[in-house]
Length: 542
Image (cartoon, rainbow, N blue to C red; front, side, top):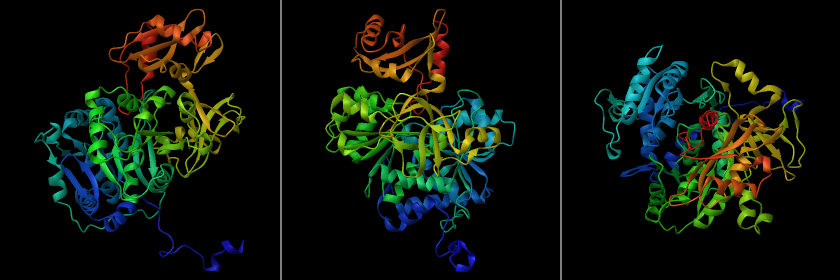
């Protein structure tokens, strides 16, 4: 007890305690890596000294525009340098960053701006019409619009708003950053996809973002000066916190506006990209790229993949191409990746399908999480480590959000029992690694039997003609529900519904075999997740 008492003189002081914030990474990098390339986008190449200078000018310009600490500043931007600068400049003004999904509809953007109370919106010229329509539909005060033109990408300024460069020019490069007095202060506001109603505002604190960024350095086995390609949208979990992470290791951020195979291969070959993150659909894009879009790689690229369980077949195909894939898992509520399929040397002998199946698991908690496990939500006890009992993935630790903005009921529900409830169903295997079975809403119940859509998708993805697939429940008079597969086939492939059903039947129990196969392009979110709610609606009409 004596060690904790104030009279020991061991209290917190300015000399021994500073609130954690990812802003400190850029402050340090501007000195340690001043002349090192920090941000690359086509002809744009900026050093860390320039990066910090522009973030400082942005913070100052926002303050001069009337933005006060605690206010919200929104962005409607693709992965361009201005978006990276906003991740430091907005919080350096004391404001909260709200990166808005550029693929949302007008009504949803209007709701987010109203609900979050954005004072300023920094928007790419491509999305200014969307923003203007959303502002017109708002119920509350209209935010100020600052426009970021991108002439090289074919999106010149509209002439209707102040440009980003003019806005920055009014900023003071000597502006003193407003750092958090408490690391629990809000850093960012991210809205969930809203596929089952209005999106919820997930609030990040400075401490969580700092520890997430540092933890991923360890999980990704990073050394100094990596070259990171920004494929994960910066509006999605703030790009999995990777933009905040790069200055910690003196990394170079290579901005990627459009996610195409040629652009990715060119960036890897020309910029010597060492790392990128992306959904499994990005891996499929590379695997199935035509020869003319590919470039020979002279180094191994480290990849984090998440957003949906990657099919073992996809992992087996991409690794021989020069990519070392680590499967990670998380949610917006956990700052992005929070678990990793940490590789162990005892698995080095595995090859082909066995190796890919091992890598496809969601794994174990990252270093910044206290406890990640699979629990029975009714009893709040861990399920047996047999790989046979389903439960819900739950999180506890510094990498969990503060809560849902202006939604205390949803916050309390998600934190029931002292853990964050993910809503994802999984199995806990003997080695403690978790393996997702399905989202609770994606489980197919046929004749009283539970069918994992993930399992069926994994089998179908093993067929050489299948590029991408999603399996959902189709109403059935006899069984209640049966599996229905929606499939994108590879260019030039020739396969029939009967072929795929027979292929699945040879590898699955009869009740798990799809009864219907529909060949169609799958609807996807901006981060590559398949929008199964649209497919479920379509399956009801078949």
